[in-house]
Length: 386
Image 1: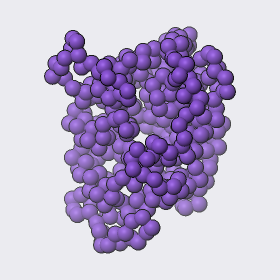
Image 2 (image 1 turned 90 degrees about the horizontal axis):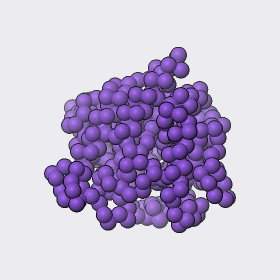
Image 3 (image 1 turned 90 degrees about the vertical axis):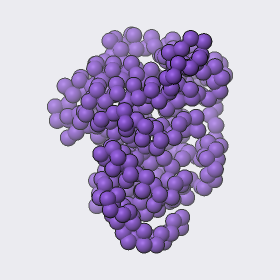
């Protein structure tokens, strides 16, 4: 058994630590009007740009034992397809996990784009298929489709994409897509079809994932909830005569001692405004089942960072410190590795890890945590390409 471990590439500004909310690395951050250029005094440009910084992160992850990296896609980020092609020239083996919502691309065009990237990079592209959480965030993209329609559209999209990949002629008549005699031409049709990491927690999501996904990707949740979710998606997939692996996207804070790790959380929490806490407890509307599952683990009253500890070494306030998912693992190097080992025992086959700042933490996690994970899993060997 191999365990794939990916890192996260922050295609947006990031602070220098969880204790500091002022971003100064990069030039993307919502609501920030004081963006400073890296390596310069007074915010003046020195010729270095943000792609140079995230290229450093990709290099750090590559040589620290991570197989590749997730390149996030949000309204405040650069476009992952473009970033992937730029970083491909900066790395040798680093794989690019490209998240995108199928409704925003024609599947035939997406197949051509992906096959071209595979050809140019030696097969280093893979997908993180996301279908969107509804509400105002989904409308930002101009998408007003209902929850189940979005997943139905995703299923059809992947039907067509896979159908045309083999060269065709391929025809398809669906609710959302109609294709006549399509197919990639040689040599694009000979490129490796990308692995698919599929996100979503609803029944509609699981139905689509069971048909097309290689990996079912979920945020970290209480461990028993994850066991139940993994069992559910694997059962659905087996009905179709397929097998699926499971992956977990999780933030971590790992330090030499547990006390040092929690000190990082405490300092970050104590720097929060009351407004930030109120928004955390009353988030914007969404029909995302995954987000609802995350919110369901939050206490009704939050007075201390300790109120957000939901399991040993699991803290449910990470989105307060940097946005994104809520739950993460906090502890000593040994404790973080042990908790990851426990997730492997529950059925995890891959991880997408992250920690702020991503550059220094790629080295720290790669050097201090991953070797312990290797040592504790006798039958699971990390597939590292650094």
